[in-house]
Length: 304
Image (cartoon, rainbow, N blue to C red; front, side, top):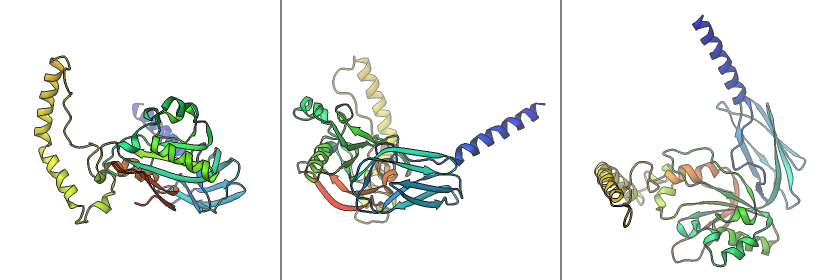
């Protein structure tokens, strides 16, 4: 009897799992209010059941494909010009409608503290935030996370630029995008992916980092940090307990670098850039200490 119940339950769960997997799934970067790059082929991608037929329809254009053996799919839409917002339909075993999709220029902003600095921390913040109603500027804020290996998605969605949504967004990227929007009279999609105080090695992919003699010092530094981590962690725990026992007076002890730390090579690329590499963009805007923001104007997808 127990065996029969267990078998039945397993069959039901297997059926539910198969049904869920058959549904077309989209990454966070493809969501309501998204902005597509103008005047360039645009890639739309996601997951579904292996061998499933998927059709993407936008502005009267339909692109069709079949998922690969592990369920991934992608289609390319022909270049689109500026125009009013429209809906995109993705149809497979299920149908998903993405609403309020605009076409314009898409920029990624990445870097350290200068890029992370939020609009609410800027000069004249209250006035800037109150004036930040721009229906044709779309914001995508990548959460600050690490990963030991590349991931395929981020927990984020496109939002329309409003006084509420812009507060925690990158000030540099917002002001850059706002100026471009006003000068070019075109919608702007701004993707913010930054983390203050992090080294460049964290933002480099594994294949690019390993085997490059010019970048080998980054790996050597981290290998040494890992060797020292057990001792450093023990010292940190002692210092932390002492700090708490003394009523949290003075500067709080800093945690040592170790597994999962934001300074670990490739971890920020894996978690904060890898999920974006298939999305078609105009270019990238970055910051360096004590220098003005620099922008690379080039239509492409983010390179590995």
